Structure formats: C-alpha cells, structure tokens
Image 1 (tube, rainbow, N blue to C red):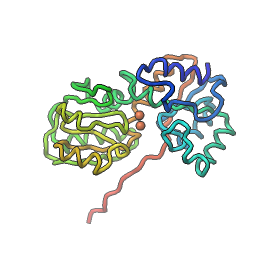
Image 2: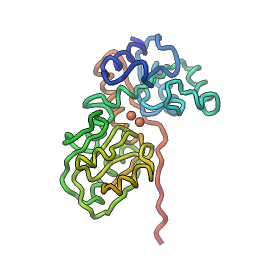
Image 3: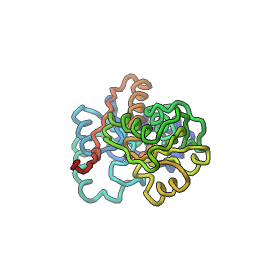
Image 4: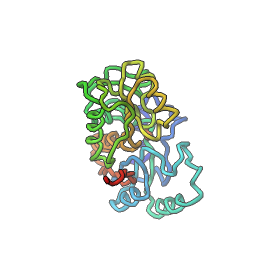
Length: 266
Ligand SMILES: [Fe+2]
Ligand SMILES: [Fe+2]
C-alpha cells in the first residue's frame, strides 16, 4: 500500500469530488513509497510533522494546507520562511504529505459536518442544504447563554477555552445549525428555522457574515476553524485503521490553539 492507493480510496468513494479539480493532492514526498504508519491531523503544522516523524510515520494526512495556501500547488508562501524550514524537515525525513479535504468534508456520517454535530450532541438533522454543507438540528429550548456555555464545555477537550457569542443572552434557542469548517451555515439555515448558527472565525467575518446573520434574526456562536473540524479528523483516523487494518494510524493535534484573556477583576 502506498499514498497513491490511499488517495484513490478517498476519491473513489467521493462522488461529489472532481479528481481533476480537487485540492486533495500530494504536497510532499514520494507517493509510491510503501506506507505502513500514518499520522492524521487537522493542519500539517511544523510540530505535527515533527511528531509524525518521531513516531516513524511514512505519511501525514492533513485536512488543511501544509504551506498556507488553499490552491493545490500551495505555492504562494512556499519559497520563504517558514516554508523553507518545513520543506527541509519533509525532505530530510522523506515523510509524504497528502491532503484529504474535499473528500472528507462531505463524507457521510463521519465526515467533517456530521462529526462536529455529533461532538456537540446535536443528534440527527431536521433540515440540510442541498449540497449537504449545512444542517439544522432540534434541541431542548435553552437560553442562549446556557447553550453557548454547553458548546464551550464541549469544545474544551479540543483545546479551545471559550466561544464568542452575538445575541441576547436570555433569548431562548432551540434550532442550532452547523456547517463544514469555514463553510458555515448562513441564511439558508435561518430560512429553514435555525435560530442560532455555530460558525468559525475563518469562515464568518464580522460584517460579511456574523453581523448580517444577526440582522436576519439569528444568534451567532463563533469558534476556531480547527475546533469545528477536529472531531472529523479523529473519525478519519479511526476510519483509516478500520478500513486498512495493516496500517498503524496516529491522530495528532499539535497545531497551536489561541487562548483568551479577560481583564482582571477590580
Ligand atoms: Fe476547513
Ligand atoms: Fe473542511
């Protein structure tokens, strides 16, 4: 088994992904080299790659880019630091990097959206967009402040220490909506009855999205991009080891997490 075989497995099970257009390509290393040990992580950070090399992995599967550029060649920042250091680590170790983004975003049941909703305990969708990027759920009615605190408690194990919220804290909500990473829920889910949208900073800018969604009448809870996608990557690691029992699979999450500060009381 090699990286090309694993990439072919993802693409052949992803009817919505066009193999000629996808960003799910090999970013570094020789994809014909035999693979027996794989690391899976949300972002191919320097610390993640170092950890994968330390574990003896032949392949790192990342959901997001390695060189900070969504286009498949990832060329924009590639000729300057810190890409030079990262490339040297990749070259010296020979580890292969494969991106699994488009295929995993919509993978049914255990892909990015469904894993995120399950992590938040939202159950089955009551509505979803045609492209299946966005979905709305029914929960027991709760004041926004309480629901947001529950979301914050659920993401704490992922390494995020808070959420930010727009909307009246006492407003009762019962129809949360989530999306696929930075492709978060929008007006489409408000039209389906959603009253609180869970979005991420990368995908939902203040005036382009969050303020507009607020004016449409929704409350908005915002988390980091990685937080919303890490449950999906854990499921990807599990899926790989179940599908290919001959592989040793490690889940890694060493990308940096922002932490928040409040002014000291008094
Ligand atoms: Fe993403
Ligand atoms: Fe994604």
